[in-house]
Image (cartoon, rainbow, N blue to C red; front, side, top):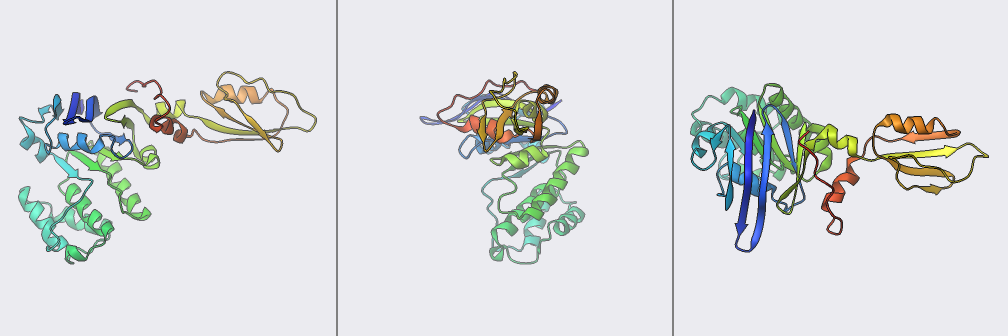
Length: 303
């Protein structure tokens, strides 16, 4: 079952096209990464999903409910973290969380206390005295504390130190294990690769890739460095899957795309002094989507 489905979702601001008719499907119980550079359309999509914006065209549903006509019911099941967190700074953290809890009907006191400890946050201080990272932690607690069926998090690790990021990752993995669903946006490849089952890449308001992380890894480039034994020379005959290489100080550097078996079979035919094979590197694959002067690679399947 898909918790989120959009069909031809578009948003225009006059002549500015924020979304160009995207189709997005997020399965239940997954951690789904929404990746793209700033201004790509991630935040616009999320705001439409939680009912803060109306689309210009297309439609969206969450839990099978229409985003426009049934948005109140949807919001009861969703925890939302905006990308531009704004809080009542005259309140203490505790009072803000109590206020949010009461607005949802109450019952989250125990979870608030657990999350306060997990994120190591003093909630008895006034918010105006919080650092940016503390405000982000408070907003995360507010979005997590009612244990929603769906978490929609816009750049959730902004301003968090590395240890707090790890804590958040553990919380999101725990939510997915319980069958809850996480949609979070990022422009950082590393956390998407580390956390996600599935990823959609958006560029200039269009979904240009929708695939599993495993499928992307199979298409990613491995970096291979090899050194032939002394006396071995000549031009290497590269098999299919190998990319043009360069030789530097006797070391041949090349890229490899495809199953590792083909690479090891080819290497076994060479007289090698040394070889290093790196893990699949998604950086080059993702960077190709963002370069203005390079056409985007062919879209992948849903995986």
